[in-house]
Length: 493
Image (cartoon, rainbow, N blue to C red; front, top):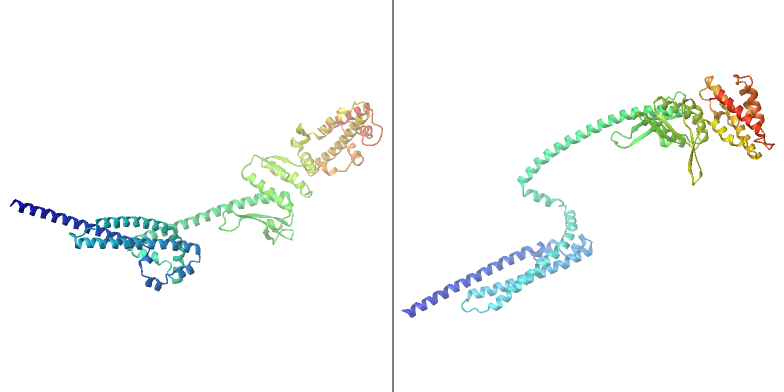
């Protein structure tokens, strides 16, 4: 009995071991089947089709080259595709061989004795799977580079552009319906916003037009002060169009009639001369300064040196308008005529005039106060009056002689203004000398009967200065200098 029980027990253990062995073989076979299916699915779609199917669909290297003329891209893709196909085909063969060995073991488990061969086969599968994964990674980038132009070319040639998106949407109808409702809401909101923006733009445009209208009135005012009664005149500042936000046009009018009727509107840049554009820029600047309540303005060369016709307008009406607006004015100019006109015209307001002189690079720019022009002349002449050097006395005589002429011109301007000529200016007498105006000025010296004689005598004493004559004595110079200084005090200051 004991022997029988031992045999039965041994048989039972064997049978159990055999069943476990067979179960393990079936599990490995199932895993290999899954790996085989995954290998197939991991391959690009065209590799899963037969050669006949690919040929029928026209999926050939030649056809791809025609659709995608980028030969290097096609070449790289084809090389990586070949490695993927070989790697997948080799792995499939190894899996097939391993599964065949497993089937043989299952069929004759008690006789099968190829465990070493099966282990080697499974190790080969692992290596082949690793290689295939590497090939697939290397294939991804070339496939993407080729896929975009290839898909676009195919869609274009077959008229199926956009079908992929349509198919994708049709697979999610609930999501499509939700997206359509959200789109409808967004569309309505966008239309409301667009309408609001249009209304805002219209409102902004109306405000801009009103501001430009006010600015245009101011610019026209300053333009007329600078260049009155011209057939070409400023018209207005305006937006280029109803939709323009940052672009404006400067318009001018041209009229051949004295009353400026029936004008033709043109762009300023197209018809204005350089002088007119200069005046237009000045008009715009002054109009903006008045609108913004500027306390003072600084103008550098406000009138072109060659613009003699309009220099008096600036020196009179423009400056008068600025002063009326309570704006302090600082003018810098290299034009001596403008400097003299402005200083003489507005000297009664106590304006300050300065000369910036740079004679010495070491000393730098020297600022000289020239408010009292005649006084400055006398101050420059005084050091030469008592010199023992005849050449220096001659220079002093010349300077006093210049002072006498300046005194005469100042008396003439003063007389004209007293009679109502507000445009009278020192520059009106450029080129005139004592011989042209001395007699008239002496008739104005009425405070002391001796004054006309003093002026005549002073001129006689210093006349040798500007000429090739014997220089006056120190006494003659001192007398002429003192008489002129007294006359200045009595009639000019």
